[in-house]
Image (cartoon, rainbow, N blue to C red):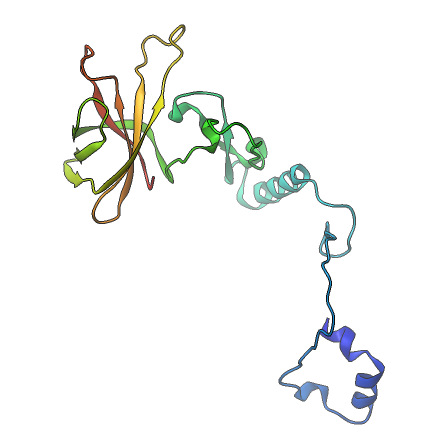
Length: 206
């Protein structure tokens, strides 16, 4: 842009008159009039048709695989499973491609809040909670006691009663400690059931 302005007749005349271009410390450009510009550039060198995200993702995957090694760069593949630990998995970026979400319904699991870090498998915790459906007010995880200052939920995830009779309904809560640490915990089962319900921690940074 600066080169284009310096090529105007006025600047060219000034430079031809002996002005040292190498001595410029500051160049100020004045925009007298502007308008929205909606065009998109497909490549750095020259403009062409708009980029298709799938083509851009494939090109990026090839570049990363060539520089880092096959499947070193990874993405996420989503599956229509109700269990969070089975609803997604990591895969080579070339397989996962760019993540695209359709608008979906408000209850779409992919659109619900999820923790930044999901444990590979839920870990049991010892929790003190208000029965029957209250969030925990404290819990012990990996021998450390955490008190709960704030909680949101529950978000109920239930199995298909026709095909998944061994799984128990889960009530998930996003909880925050007085220190600001956030966890994703859930209760599997209901109070009064046999066996008794159990509490688990499933994610961090909820």
